[in-house]
Image (tube, rainbow over all chains, first blue to last red; front, side, top):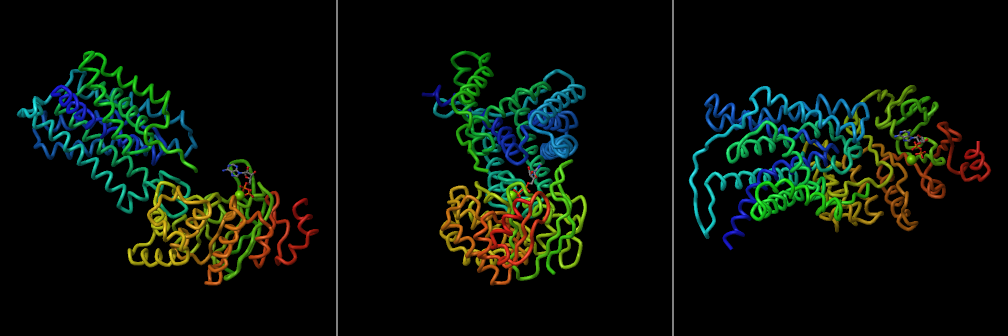
Length: 289
Length: 234
Ligand SMILES: Nc1ncnc2c1ncn2[C@@H]1O[C@H](COP(=O)(O)OP(=O)(O)O)[C@@H](O)[C@H]1O
Ligand SMILES: [Mg+2]
């Protein structure tokens, strides 16, 4: 029983990070129809910016957080403005965007490597452990799960209830009609990149605090985010969160029984099974338009 | 003259679809735009609202050249557009769809007031205000698409094949709604494949063929089958 609970908690912890990434990816796909795999390096950039400000420069925590959010938001928006929007103007289709996003992912990783070196960074963050029902959770882990849930909740709320959020969903449904109604879809896309990049920065910060930062982890994070959004149904924000929970928990089960080496293989196996048997994902909609 | 189009040329890339089209719409009129598939009817409407860029000619709104005004400026000028294909936002609720129709309205009170009057006009929507638009029937979706365009209280409403794919009974309902709208003062420019409907509801008509105006005049003249035949075959 304790084992199951512990696996569950660890799975939810991993899902807290994946969810912030996958939610943004899925949302970006919905609003811009781009699978922004370079999102992985936006996460890494946020994590490193936070580490640099907090551990290297000794800034207070809150200032380092704000700095990281700004760095990631600027990186994401810049990728959109200087690469994706340019391609869009030229009428580029799917494959062109895929090549561009892989190029950005590789380039971004190289920049992080050049700036911070290959050695992983850790925080050695002081935290206390709590035991209840035979399960061990640190204060930090509690805050990671809470922060992620809160951010995703706020994000969902803005999408659901604010005028701008509704306009984003309208653009996701049908960009041309949104334009006909006077919605500035270019501005919508820019904001979508800013918002999802802020979620990405939060993921990077949480990874830095709980695990460690590795300049090459962007690719793997992008793949996990991609897998979670496919499982949830591409374009569905809530689906991406459920997908993250599934991946996070299954990974922990696999790690428990098979060892850590099987962790990433588990992600791919789930992804493969979904692509085979349920390619539209759990909450994928077959749009009529 | 509300809308005056002079010698309009437009197309896609190298493909010239409209080869010099002239058309007029006076305030209060219902003007039908007919013609076979691929004639350029949708392209003409899209050029008016700026979705397709014109290469030559003039589009005058109350005597002023619309030039390259962005879409939101046209909406604020009083030109509404309902595109072809019942394009509602399927994942948004009926209410959210209507709110998006009034996206450019600055005041929440104006939005609520207009929403209320659209719901008065389309009572079917009132009962489904919280449903996702994608779950509505075809007729309801078309009513919603029209209702959404009314949120900005347009002076001229441009509709692209509002009856497309609807059952005859529903078509009649849609056109009766349009007639009411017109009686309330809204000018209509309607692309319609169904000649019978165009004849019944419009006052004047144009037949477009291969990017040119083949015929223009009062609808009574259009009902002459020989004229019709000529226009379509010319
Ligand atoms: N987005 C587009 N890109 C390229 N060609 C187009 C596009 N839309 C329409 N066309 C072409 O323009 C011509 C006129 O189309 P359209 O204006 O839709 O005609 P209609 O509405 O009268 O059926 C057709 O030959 C069509 O293939
Ligand atoms: Mg058409």
